[in-house]
Length: 94
Image (cartoon, helix red, strand yellow):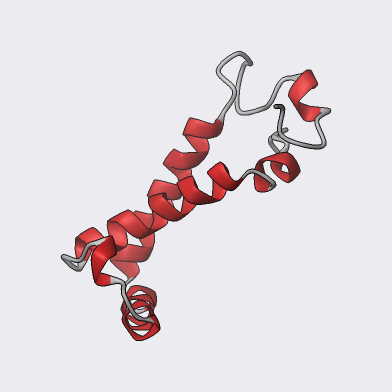
């Protein structure tokens, strides 16, 4: 298993904003929608229902999420892992 400090990343609001964008953007683009079209819970529910019944779109989002993980990797280390210093963090570094 990769040695990425997921606990600290999960505490960062920027991580969640980035992940949400990575997931939502291809879904909305596929259906020809924009974030401005998501004005009611019903519209969000409809898009989610359509998403979960579309294997192509699920695969597209999975590939986008894998790309997101690639962006998260520490470029100062070899492979997909955080540095020893980053693995020791308990909170995002300020």
